[in-house]
Image 1 (cartoon, rainbow, N blue to C red):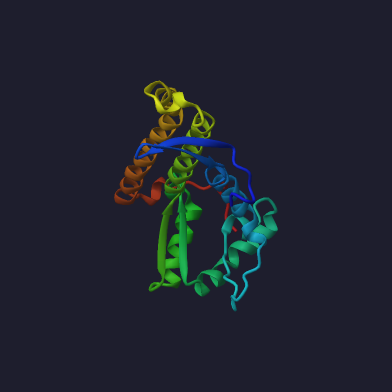
Image 2: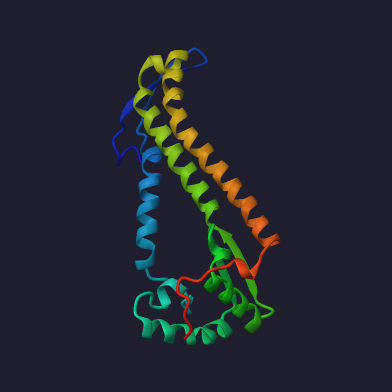
Length: 207
């Protein structure tokens, strides 16, 4: 890629008493995060070439109308058809999940209609930890990259100058990890001590 993207600086080093000047572009360091975010945003619009059958997903918050009462009622009554035809229930678990009557109803309906099908529990805090680690490492690289050409960077003072600002994203990662472990313990506690009488409904009305 050196002939396509210009190098940002030359990195001076020595190997076996030979002084070398290595062109360094840093493009492979700076571009992964923006490219990953762009790929994530564009993925729904990219056709699946070679895929014979498109996967079908029933996402309740999208597939059931949330404001129109008549459409919401039709969506709720049609839930049984989707549940009976589903091969897997994927739960994107967050803190209030087991306190919502609707979520518990979906879980019970799927198990009743598909006793042999899979129920996949995916806590959202895991994705939050991965995203925070990914972003904080990128911030650390952005801080260190401008200092790499200088000779002082290879000294202890230069390394210290990088690691002091790095404490900010590191503290953010530790905070997210601590919160993630707390939510994990809460999930196990809610599963062990689940009480149907403690769940709530947004609207106390029957259809």
